[in-house]
Image (cartoon, rainbow, N blue to C red; front, side):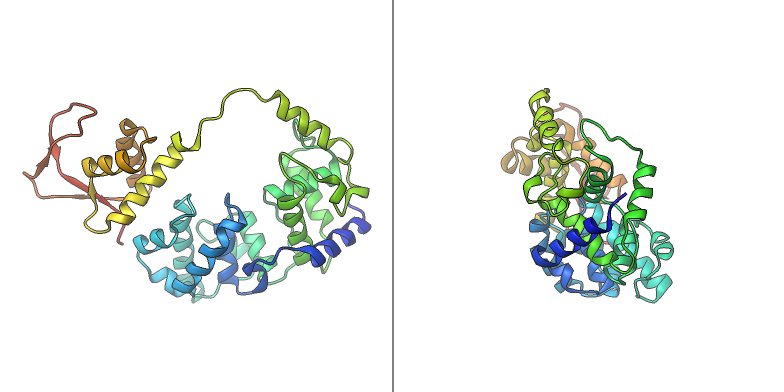
Length: 320
């Protein structure tokens, strides 16, 4: 479904024009694992400085596995989706325990690790061990669909399973590394979700979406209605600011009232009435610890809810 000429054109384009990114200049499987987790839902430009600093602080599987969760969360500051940091640490702890600190090379062994799904397993096997493995993130799915099937808007024309089969068939033997990197690069730079620079695309001659996708994307943009909630008013933003406050506070952490005062001063868009629920969710997820003070020590309840005094509890980043 993807002609060999298109495969050659994409690989040649990637080789000539690819952005220089630090994880593309190594075959260290641990470093590539770190980059793949960081790149989930985060743009490469934001990841680069955090990736380099993170590897300087935790240069090996063993060093990350041995670190405290609080250290890992602090090192992750600025990337968002903090749960990824703890998942990465759990993965490294499992690698240290099951594989002697060596990241396994097979997709099956990688996928058996906690927190590793089909995409990450395939990416590590391909980018670290140069195996011909087909896998798909959102960029790869979009490019494969447009090239091999047709426009993916206003909806896909094939199922997820069919798309995986097409991606597997499109993989050129012996060129898995360059092919997969090329698909990701194309999806990140030219063939985007909301725009398509078809005139600059190296595979436009063979792409089934060429000539249609730009018109469809423009129409989709014009027809979009419904207001977007500003990011600063979302739960994700509020949770991130709570984590940031606890990073700054360090041990012994903050009481709920102290946290509310910090948020009121530093992040006035956060809905303070939702903070207790966010805190409890973060505690359940292991992102935050609630540390009880001795019985009989009370604090005045936050003024926003008017409830009676409660036992003092401090919240902090997890230390074990």
